[in-house]
Image (cartoon, rainbow, N blue to C red; front, side, top):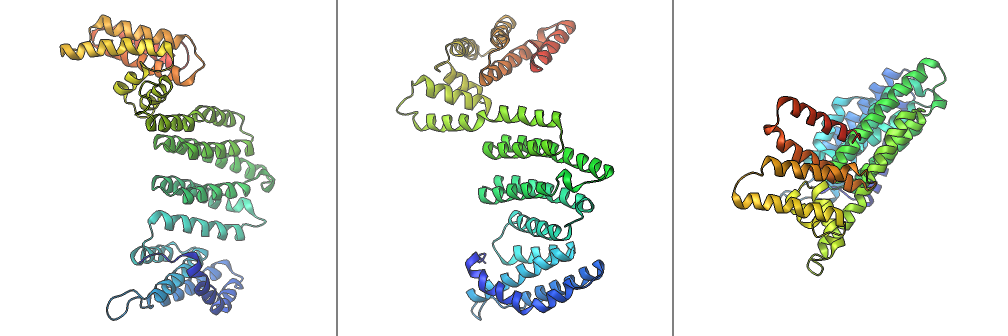
Length: 385
């Protein structure tokens, strides 16, 4: 069944919360924490079972729209209270019923449960944040995972909601709440872990072409570093931000060039945009070099033409390039890289092609010469021409 719209749920949820208000307040008033959780659990079970008893189809099998909305309302209110009780088994059962009865994905449910858990921890952690550090850490990690899954599923709104939740969690992880040395140490350890996970996930988002979201996650990583006064971590985040900042523009330029390819096939600027995207993002070197040879960068165009001529000739002969030709191309690309150009895209293209052609020479090198060449490539990758 379709998931009810928010406006459909307003009235039945309000009625349910009013009808069970006294039960909820009675559970909340229980002084002992464990006993309180049990009271919330029993209330959640009661609501869940009531929801399962709602008959959503008539005698002919057609969906009763009012009953469809009402059952969903029972389930959602029950889920909210089950999360508050801390009983993961019941949370899982309600989630299964929601997934079975309604057209709701697992990541949408996970997003909703994470938000409910955030609200729950926020209430219970007031005035005692250090005791809930692990809970905040787990919530942040869940929100980060949900963000990636939501974006991969094409749900940009859900991804941004999880990003917002991550920032709200960071507001609870401020040094001012951690007064004692041991607490501060634990906080810094946690912040370091979350920083690393943000960096790692941003790279995953980049691989899936989610450039703008990757940048936003990197800015969260930087915020974490600043919170923990981690200078090296902040520098790392800044380095990735500077590197990733070029990708959204690269994507826009490519899309514009692709749209104009029919009208402006020989436009050097369009050709360069196509080349950069195909080489650096899609790893399509044959097509990429073809566009690069007709691009607006004379230096890259010249070496791309040489590269194309050599590989085309080898293809016509149905034989690999000779060792001498491979070495000539490797040295040409290396010379371009060693020029220490400040254009990041040009440096990356030249480094990748340098590496490619030197690796083609490996079978014909002596063991010592191969070791020397491998070391040289490592040095180039580390920025030491």
